[in-house]
Image (cartoon, rainbow, N blue to C red; front, side, top):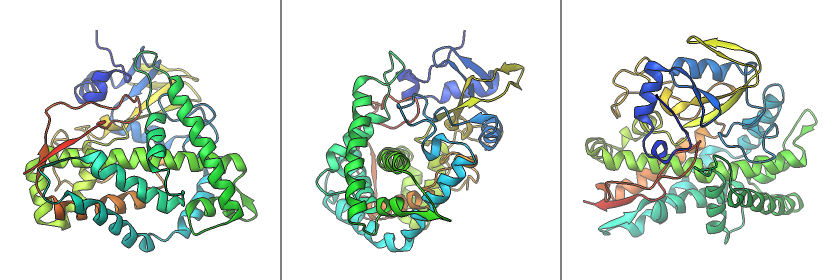
Length: 387
């Protein structure tokens, strides 16, 4: 009997064979292990993402939710509250002009890439990816320098889950509570002494007299720290992994940096770090011969939808010439990621600088240890050998 357990280490390591079976044979599948339905085809996932009245995020969007988030963050609310939050947060983002961030971000990437020149090998996350994402996040949010290592460790712990209990373990909850206490202190400081950073802009964002309340500012800040470190960091690590694995693509991009943006988009399709998010049904739904009941949780398997042959011919091939428009690497529907522009810019600038210093590399190990997370997928370490 076919089973699909999104908490399984085997799924963390390689979900794609199971995804194909789901798409071809069980496109609307009840996972006993997860206690929810799994939608695996691109068209079904896109439709669900657009139909927030049926597929609600208000009970939480992470496969294993953190306490207190549901119904209070941009990713865990439905319109009209979602639209209000998105408008206010978007207003804060607009205060930080992307063009003004480009050169500082490039400078950060150049500083971190330079020491890698001439090395026979390096560990991507520790030596480049993590340093880059944390410094960019701290600069954008206005977080105090000196806390980088601890903040990263707590953010990575927050998104993990226990593969045995299929729940957040005490250490995951403790990391989330630490992050909220940390964010509270920074928010209080920014309210007293505003700067040109996102936390200051969140605190003061106002549209027609409406402002984010204290809890919304806190949870938005906490979520952005988590997303900025883990989502962006995982995205970068998976891109490095794809370039290390597919030599022809890496050599093409290193020889012609104009191909970099398309390679990034194909990586977001082919190997997105944001694999699975959940929704809760507000009514009964008949789909592919199955009846999903109101109140049931539904997993939207973005990583599977991105490999759906019905949408992308030769979907199992990493092809940087593909131009995969409409991919689900940043989610979709009303909950498409708000930070897509800065994420794309950051990764492009980071790899511009990295490939200028280290144009040719490959994975130093055949097997990788993968982060235990029912929602995100990325290696815990990525050892690269320089050629």
